Amino acid sequence: MSGVVFRDVLVPFDGSELSETAAPFAAEIARRSCGTVTLVRAMPEPVIVTDIPKHLLAQVTSAARKELEAAAARVEAVGAKTLLREGLPADVIVREARSRDLVVMTTHGRSGLSRFVLGSVTERVIRLSPVPVLVVRPRRGTLKAAATAAGRMLRDVVVPLDGSELSRQAVAPLAAGLAGDTRLHLLTVVRRRASASEADGAADWLAARAAALGERGLAALTRVVHHDVPAEGIAAYAEHNDCGLIVMSTHGAGGMKEWMVGSVTDRVIRTGPVPVLVVPSPGRAKKMRTK
Image (cartoon, rainbow, N blue to C red):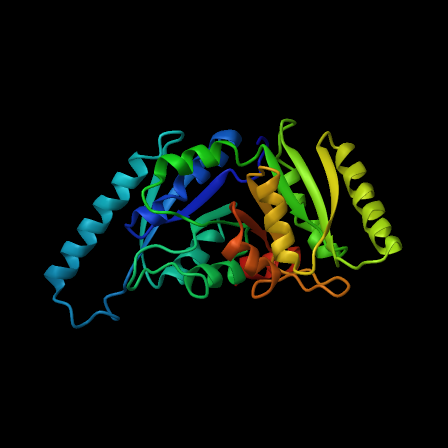
């Protein structure tokens, strides 16, 4: 990746190894863009934890800072900065995201006040972030595996399109900074019993999108996937074609499909085999930056 896209990458960290598995993906993106990584950790505000003695709260804060700095030191590809901020996790992340280019986070981390679970912190960040959010589904004890996956993340990238302007815009921020060694897989999902004319129309529309990207020096192939459950069709294609990343918009209704968090995008995040880059619509991104 080159250029100015995704040069300032934010990684929420809660002290768990699960949340730390997002760091290698952030580091890979920052390395390609000659950018920086910042690890942020949210701590409860004193007003929320008034029943905890001040000296114990100070100890907890000190331990959290040490864990944060140790995690930053393990981001070997680039130098990582650290931030310790008071507030609820989602609020802290969204607030910090306003001055960043990208958030990279896991779907869950440790339990308690800093729990990262889809439907809680992660989903709230996806809904409110003014910048794209790269969501990684972690597995325990796999920091090394995460680094390997991060290294192949941008080799083959799946971009599901549903015919809407919003879904087409999802590729824009990614394509602006991709190097020539990345191959985009543009696909759309049609019903198994779709007519030949419907499938041909989808293929023609994808071909036009691929041609436009080709003019920008990006290699893109097109596929029409026949499946009655769009999310399953997208995930299966990514897995069977050894792709490293799926790029989707937060919403992009087109035809009979509705792609948004809580529907197709949400299901791909939950069940997909690779990280998912969720891109906000331009209008929402502008609105959230000014809040």
